[in-house]
Image (cartoon, rainbow, N blue to C red; front, side, top):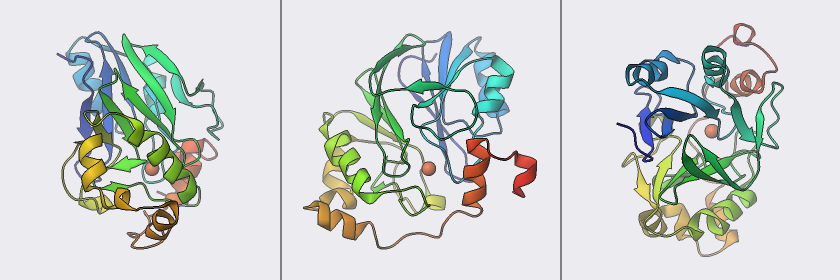
Length: 237
Ligand SMILES: [Fe+2]
């Protein structure tokens, strides 16, 4: 039984996280990978239906499954209104939506990518994508990032949420050089996340220039595929 509590689905090899949110019958799929059977099978087995897909941002390390899910289900794709994609989508603004029986507050949280959104579900859990990770923050060195914007998104928006709010990240695990748990809370991250201990914007910007893990292979190609600029077969992935 799926309640309004988001269900986390982690891709073992990559540590990429997708989420199902909504009621038992109608679900929103957030950040699906393109092995879409992994999402369709359990949803169909439970007699549920995917009624919307949301991509928190244009991903740079995997092919989004959103368009394939749309092809299979006919559901709309939601992304931030500034998303640079070349296919039709339903634009999200920074406001509250009622989707699949769920209250979803959209927060525009640029930094990792300009169009990045975080999703506050029922005031209880925030799907933070690659803005705030467990004990880390999203990288800004993949060509579309901005550490200044990330500072504003985290300190000006996500850390304004109450301590009890659960943090559900877009990536976990060693593949992303993120250690620790698969989820956290705003309160724990406020106290324990090294990036959030910086005392000023300047300190944060300095922190964000150091210690990057290697860039994902073919990240520019993934961005082009996920923007709809080229098809997967042309990308050489
Ligand atoms: Fe990302």
